Image 1 (cartoon, helix red, strand yellow):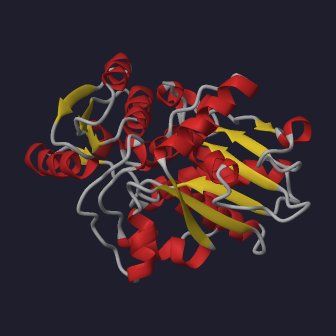
Image 2: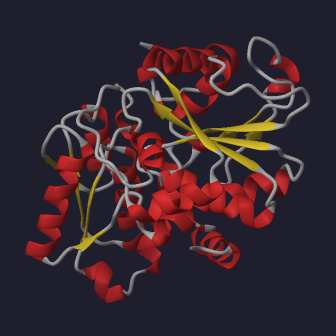
Length: 313
């Protein structure tokens, strides 16, 4: 398990290359209809490449030796992790190949190419693309960068919690979207290391409850199918590393459906002018849909973890 020193070291390593994103006091003006007065929004949608993924990927790539980086980087992605790795590869001036499943919007593939990455389309969901990426790494000697089950990735994502609690030390609850579990693993571990009494609530799609079902089964399970348009929250399977961290540090996981995420994305756009993809709006959706109901006076922070416009359709 990671400790506070790991997260602090990651923060120093990536500081010159990522943005310290705003912490917006949204509830102060807009309280009501599911929005608590103490609501804060951490706007990782304004992060370089458009999501928190730049933190973990940059920490991972800068942690590699020059020889490892020079071999070239390869990963599989639902889009955002690929953008983070492409950005980190651009920083390190090394070649990057990203394997994408067919449920990734073509616009993200185009953004990957703009960062200099090669794109390979494989399979229908992230797990299919990941199998292909691992095989390519073994065959060609590329350095494989996992999307969520890597301590360096988790440490990079956890730097978000350092920023939040520096600005809002009296925070009571963190709401965090879950895909493979890298984000919530890092955020929950770092937050608990700073403030053991803080409560961390995970949010998954009804159509991809990977960690929700794994916690119930007390083991990593593989979903038979994915039924959500929030493709960046939709691996069929997580990993033992993430499940162990989540079991220890996350109070519970709640589920939201695609329409609830769309409503939250529309709220962010029409009330605040923030363009969030479905995954980026998931944490807020838990509040608006009453999947998580804060107690009176509770200070809550919801992570807006990714930019996009798919929630406005």
